[in-house]
Each structure stands twice: as C-alpha cells, then as structure tokens.
Length: 209
Image 1 (cartoon, rainbow, N blue to C red):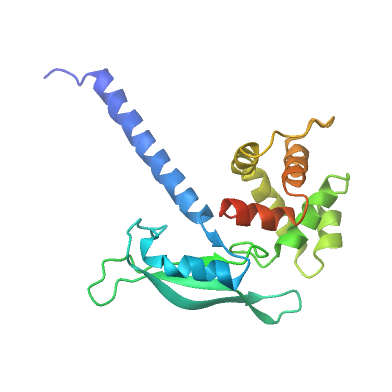
Image 2 (image 1 turned 90 degrees about the vertical axis):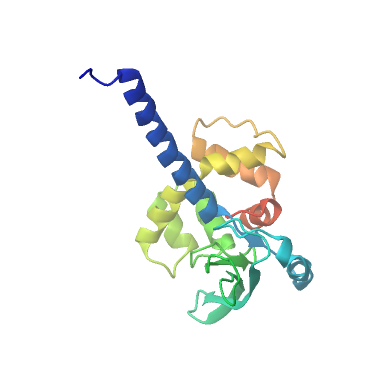
C-alpha cells in the first residue's frame, strides 16, 4: 500500500490551523462587540429597531428582547445601573440561542468594575514615567494592585484594534518616544480630547478592552 501524499497531509494540517484561528478570532470579536448609549433617547432608538439587530453570539435576526437592567458596583460598593441586558430568546418556539449581551453606558468598561475615567487616569499617569503600581494606586485606590497589572496587560493586547480604529479618523501624532503604549495613549487623546475612553466606546460601538 502506497504512503499518503505529503501534500495532502500538509493541506489538511493547514486547514485545521486556519479553522481554529478563525474560531478564535470570531470568539474574540464577540467578546469585544457591544453597544453603548449616552441618553435614554439613544436607547429608545435602538429599542425601536431591536428586531432588526443580529445577536452577537448566533447572528440571528428577530429574536432579541429586553431582559432587564444590568447592575454593578461603584467605587463605594453601592449598586448602580450600568446599562441594559438583551436576551436572544429561545422560548415559545423562538429560534434564538438563549444567550444575553449587554448595552452599556460608555462610562463603564464591559466586564470590569473600573470606570472609563479611572482607567484613563491610570493610563495617562503611565505616560509620565510613573511605575504601573504607583500610577494605579494614585488613580484607582479602591481596587487591588494586581488588577492594575492585568488591566495594563489587557490594554497592551488590545492596542491593535484600538489604533486601527483611531487611524480611520485621524493619523497618529508625531511623538519623540518610541513606545507603542505611549503612542496609543497619545493618539487616543488626540482623537478624543474629552473623556477619551468613553468617547471611543460610544463612537465605535465597541468595548475599549
């Protein structure tokens, strides 16, 4: 019996690698995808067309319904409304996937307790030469120091999607420091000088990190 052709073996290997890579990218984009609204009028505009929106998990149209408020905690530990929850209904013969996603106010960071203004203050302090631990303590006193390292690492990981979108509005500013993190922060401030992270999330309708 003749041996298998190595061309076809490599072909199937690369096909499996591409399939796994594609699934990973899709999962990452689903995690990033979200909707943000500043005012109740903006939310009403979304709600009026809710049946025309696709579910970010299964991409079906016509199965989304409201599912209550999304609650979280502020710096003092009090419960606050962070936004709304949307349910892809799989009840009463609906064909949805049964998963939920959130519509947030842009002052909040998806899946994080830290607010957008505190995260920006932390990132901005890192550009002054302050160590990460000191910059985080001066900006976010109510959270554990280890959270600062995790947030900064996640920000570095998300730089590509942040800078890609910023480039669609304005070219990056010329800076003398050859540091990608510093350049991303300066570019963000150049494009959105007021509440940069909140403005980024609201403009692009995507989570910052």
